[in-house]
Image 1 (cartoon, helix red, strand yellow):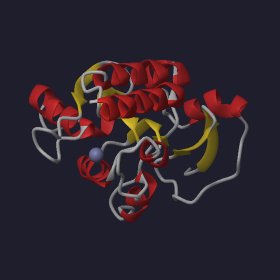
Image 2: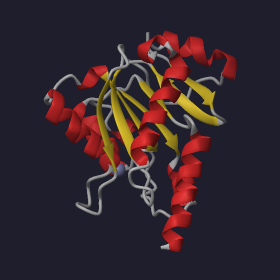
Image 3: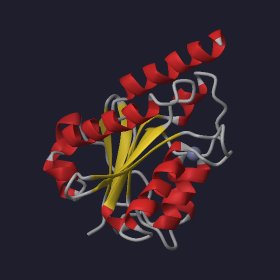
Image 4: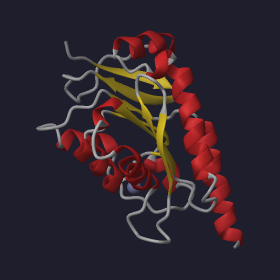
Length: 204
Ligand SMILES: [Zn+2]
């Protein structure tokens, strides 16, 4: 049943994981296989695959624009209906752990209660840091989609803890198995957002 495949989305490798998949990388497949593999993984948000991922990433970018200097934005979507359930933007000026993903998760609980996480997909402009990755793991969010990688964010002058999301996830394998971990969605746009933020911080 389980499978693990390495896909290439937006020029960056991404891993789609089945519910019972091990976390090691599988055989490479070409970009043309992306759509069908997402379908096969049951990872098709609102039935539209990559197009839907990009649409929801645009919503995360919209959130990110609310904090132009630290444009970490996130939305939480009901996976099989595409309903946007919660939103958030980095608010760490108010509190150090109020990263975009944490703010979106807090918004989710406020609106929908602390339940239903396994039916959601978290979209975020940047690869979740260890705080946010752990929060998603503890909640049981099974699908996480991000734009810029930790390395790409770091290159725009924002310090990062160099612990990839996939590493956090793999260390939680005793109780957590994701359905989808997908990086690099609209990375051209999210990278531009982080570069613009760097210019803004340098000018202010
Ligand atoms: Zn974070």
